[in-house]
Image (cartoon, rainbow, N blue to C red; front, top):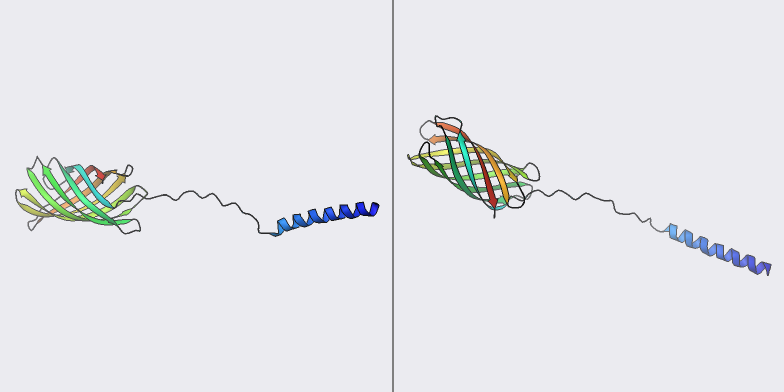
Length: 175
């Protein structure tokens, strides 16, 4: 009986030991590391429209002006955009009314901020003159469809000498 009891204890110990070894012999279970979600940059592609006010800095023109833009951006998939816009412009102090067409290119500076450059041609209706414009600016998205825009614009009359610069601030919507 003593032999039977010793054998039963030995068999139990051997069974429990082999189960413990079998459990530890398998691959170690590793919990996946907690990864912070990747930040998502604002998608600037698609249609947009904005209204702005501006102030002349030079060129012998004094006062403020306003205008609107309508444009479309395409994304290059790497945080950059390119596109174009048409604009209407009115300056009551110089009685200037004009329209313009511009090409734009930009790059995400941060998740919600776009830096851009713009080059365009425009035509003043009264008094009649054709001009070019160069702009550098920033846009900041306030969610999926609203943004603020600031831009420095340098303009020159074609072919007569004469140039001006101004600052524009606006608010816009993407749709």
